[in-house]
Length: 120
Image (cartoon, rainbow, N blue to C red; front, side, top):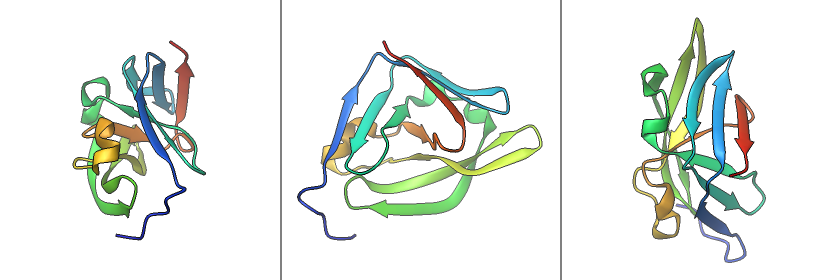
């Protein structure tokens, strides 16, 4: 893993926000119990409980990435009709201790889907 910058911040917090994720008009997730992860220099990310995600539309990918602030991420692609949204979802199954609240939750690339957040 890369060296960690002590000035880089990662904060996880539970929220009552309502998060809905859609692609091509298909709802991929609907959650009222996300964890928002705020990280220096990056957009806020919403990590959703697996039970709030339509996992039957997801296909496991071989891709993994390493983050010195969160750990190893695994990826999934989403099948929406005839379109495959490659590596659009990720999760940290065994995050480092400071990112423990996101363990096993799924996160969508908001830049590649329609993600709406209604403040709780």
